[in-house]
Image 1: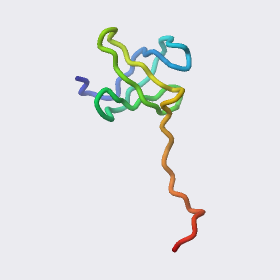
Image 2: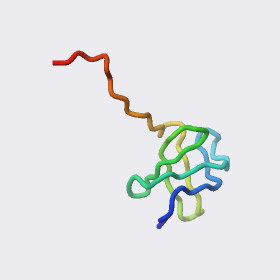
Image 3: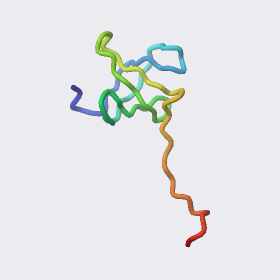
Length: 75
């Protein structure tokens, strides 16, 4: 459906109760699952074809960077 990334447009933002704000879709993760960035936070987003808009879940769909833990002892 979407072939060129990033996509910059107004999207519905969860933490703002669905208000439209500028956000970025960085890439597709799966079926109707996209990696989005809003206010420097990477999170999940879905696309609603009925209203032709993305919905960014910056409340519960935050993606945290995986860092290797160096505090664990070697075995």
